[in-house]
Length: 45
Image (cartoon, rainbow, N blue to C red; front, side, top):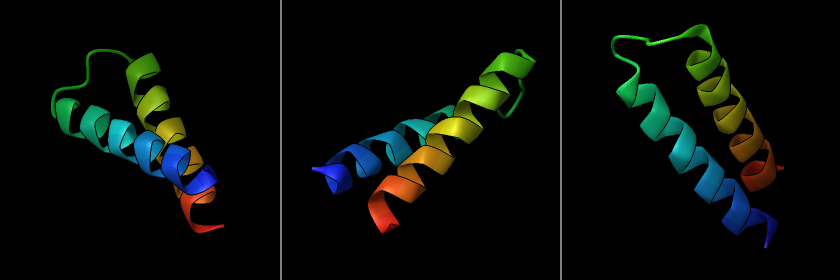
């Protein structure tokens, strides 16, 4: 189950990162980075 949540969070983070070609706010950049980091840790570790 951790791998599924990790993959979902990683995909959300990747989508946010792609949407941030022109960053709207610093909070969105932090949210994208946290989703990518948490998703990677849940999926791979």
